[in-house]
Amino acid sequence: MTEIHHLHPHRHPAVPDDDGPLGYYQALEVAVRELLVEKGIFSGDDVRRAIEAMDARTPAQGARIVARAWTNPAYKARLLADGTAAARELGIDTAATRLIAVENTRLLHNLVVCTLCSCYPRMVLGLPPDWYKSRAYRSRAVREPRGVLREFGTVLPEDVEVRVHDSTADMRYLVLPERPDGTEGWSEERLAGLVTRDSMIGVTRCRL
Amino acid sequence: MLSPRFGLGARVTVRRADPPGHLRTPWYIRGQSGEIERLCGAFANPEELAYNRPGLPAQPLYRVRFHQCEIWPDYSGPAQDTVEVEIFQHWLEPAP
Amino acid sequence: MRQHHDMGGLPAGPVDRREHDYALWEKRVDALMMLLSEPQRQLLRVDELRRNIEALPPDAYDSMSYYERWISAIAHTLLQRGVLTADELGRKLAEVEARGTAG
Image (cartoon, rainbow over all chains, first blue to last red; front, side, top):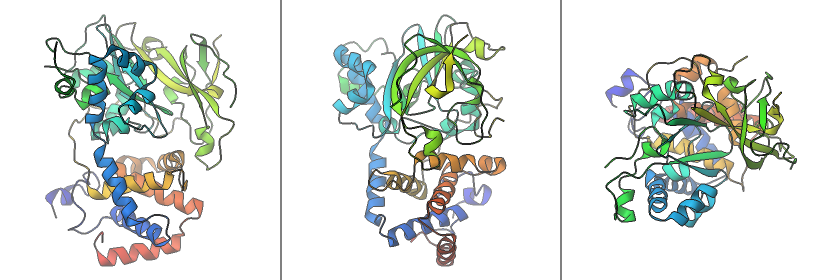
């Protein structure tokens, strides 16, 4: 039992649930899961495999795509034309959703939000950070993107267009950040190490 | 699927409808005008899927680009800033 | 009327950039959603999940954590679909709470 549990039982569900009293919704998860397993709808192994697949989806996937696009102009062209197919080329399956890559340039900066829920390109970035799902981000990113960007330390010149992408339906967005200066001749692997999750959401830029 | 009604670059207005139900057209964009950035394909209508109905025929889905300063009268950024929203065809009309 | 979840453009405070690592129970909720929505099962549509999240009263929507909203919506969807009944859910919940572990 951790102190967080005592302070905010509903706001910080990060505590492991296996060694303390279950909250109502944790108990509900157990109840639903056990009933579905008893009914033969899926097995406990199916659940474990789904979690393993989830853990395997991380921002490293997106970083591979970005680094490939930075080093291979033909791949970049294919990525911008059809993100779903370009992800598949690298063995990344986008399942039912489609991937759209949007390119940052000297004069254009892209920022991704989902104002209605929290749609996120999980197949290339894994599970979203808490702030992406927060009321503050979802409300403000679309109306005062430059203010939100400033909170992430990203200050853009006035001649840059800020383009916000509200993921309302079946598309998911991956920002292709600008390649930092001073990385000429770097290998794809080394470049991938520079590409952060936040730069692929568009709240920051890639830096050396 | 229904055939696409709008071409690339067409000026469109988002319908100012307000039905109950599960809607994927955000409130802030209803009644606003923008231009078609691309046709994303056709997808089952989420307003029907939400009630476990098939949502067919598939509805063309567009990405529509809007100028921030037209949406928010008090927008504090420069005039070139934009927002793009995915909108299903049945929410769109030709802009007047 | 603007629905509570439809918050684009509303005033709000600064973005709290703190993050937490997802707990196992949160990942299990996510796994339930993925498994139930797979083509071979189709016992839940993501839009049904969203509809049931959107149906939460505003104060519940704001005070529940992300995966609390999800498991609530998954349970409601399964009740609506007739996959589970309230009676069996109630009995199982009592059993789980008496046991006191995720088992």
